[in-house]
Image (cartoon, rainbow, N blue to C red):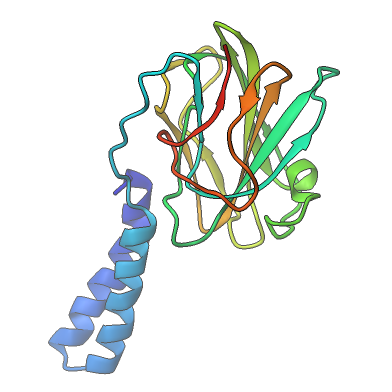
Length: 203
């Protein structure tokens, strides 16, 4: 479990144990069930990225919502959007190895993460990653339920493929932008696992 989760886990767990000690079994069951959900939400399984040097992996667990043509800073490319349900792992990972040229926090709205406008208007952390093949951009996007995006990395940090870079709390969205030239390997509706599923190849 990620360290961020312990402060959410401790209160219901402690109160649940206390309620059980006093014989308040109904209350204890509710509190301990809440603690179990929190522990599951903040789980952080180990992942083994692929050995393929051209692989671009999913930055998050979830379901691919869309793969669309989209320019970024005047450069043509495509965006992959991934929806994270509350039962998905919410630890986010680097889609490629490289150096973070910039990490930019943008305050914003809290539209439902499945809405298209959430990508541009919701609160988000934007990561600009310089790789051996060029720059890619990925975003942690807050949603209606997920109202906190947490980055564990800063500008100037080097990351390796599949490395943990942050966390989104309680249901959200992750966007990945790749320039033309990268071969997309996923379609809307597919399920992906962060740090493992290859969503594109960039030769």
